[in-house]
Image 1 (cartoon, helix red, strand yellow):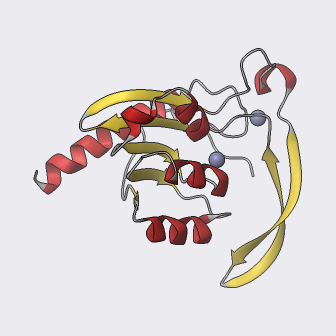
Image 2 (cartoon, rainbow, N blue to C red):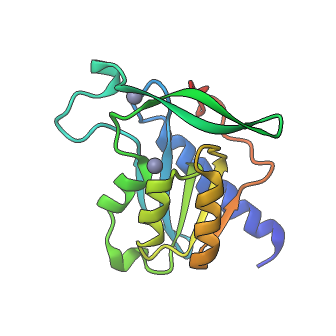
Length: 172
Ligand SMILES: [Zn+2]
Ligand SMILES: [Zn+2]
């Protein structure tokens, strides 16, 4: 496979993840994830409230405030962050709705770099490659070193342009 073919498949599947993310009813963050085996799409998921539970558009986001360390101009700084904790993350929904046998050796395309919890679940799910678009600074360091130690290909999509109007601005 040539480099440009490879890039086309990356774009194709990330575009689908972006489209899927628009189904999310969380007003703070839309995340989409797709499971790919070879070139076959085996599952799609987005972040959302559990079935039968009011979602963020009906009940409002369930906001949790927490202090997190963040690099600000090269210095570790404590910053106050707001996170919506109502939703099941896209990656977790993807694992809930796909079979282990389908995941063995597969690739996940996800619009946002997985958080620590999702990264651990993915690492234990049979998935061997994770491709993401937006970096997620909060857990970045430990997630990346964990992926490396597990031998999972973990790569950002460089210079990717999401389809128009699929990405909302993240409030955090
Ligand atoms: Zn929400
Ligand atoms: Zn997550």
